Structure formats: structure tokens, C-alpha cells
Length: 153
Image (cartoon, rainbow, N blue to C red):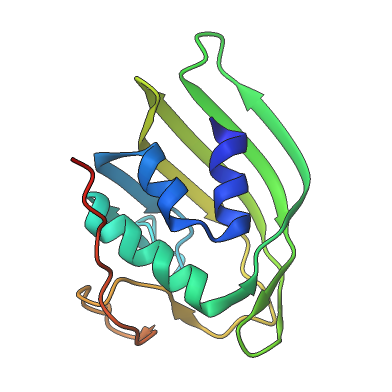
């Protein structure tokens, strides 16, 4: 499942992501931009997670994970992917981070994801957040339109 999720991210295929995530999905961006132990962002529910990913897809012209290493727990329920990001922003700048992503699977869906990245020196200091999220003090938000969650019934 982790390979399919990464392939959907690289293809910027929101429909494929929708098919993989649980309605109650949680996505945590564990990297703290302040040095404090709290995560940079936490998104709960498919609407918030898809809003965040829509922002990523909008703000990145290309998404490519390279130099990947995958580890899977003995029961197969959790996988970890370490990779370097070879992204390009929508305005053509390189966006290079090193990522460690934990994906928990349950009944063929992703109920939880936790992502940690090193900060890219070429990245602007802004978090990609869903349109309805409130920026934290001292942070910049990236403006974008609302995300419509496709009907999954």
C-alpha cells in the first residue's frame, strides 16, 4: 500500500489518494519549525487531509521521491519509507527535503500517517495548510481555494 500511496502522491492523483484513505484519517507533520516538541501540523478527517494534499499538489509542479528505503513491521500493518524529495515548486524552485513517512494500514485503507522532513534551505518558511485551518502565530499560511471531498458512497 505504501508504494501505491507514494505513486499517487508523485502523480498528484487526488482520486487515487481518496480511494486509499480512511474517512477518519489522521496526518501528522511531525517536524516542528519552532524546536518545540509539538508537531508542525495535524490534520484529522478526510476533508482536512485532502485539503492539505490539494495544497501540496497545487504548490509543487513536480513531486519525486528518490533514494527510497522501505521497512515494514512483522505484522505488515505499518510501513516506513525513508526518501529524499526531489520536488519543484510551482514557480520553478527546487524543493529538497529528506522524508521519513510512517503509514499505518487497516482493512486496505490508511487511517494514520506521520511524516517527518528536514527543512529545505530553498523552501519558503510557510506551512501548506487547508484553507480553513488557522495559521499558528509566527507562521505564514499558503492561500488556496477550498477542497471538495469527492463523494465516496
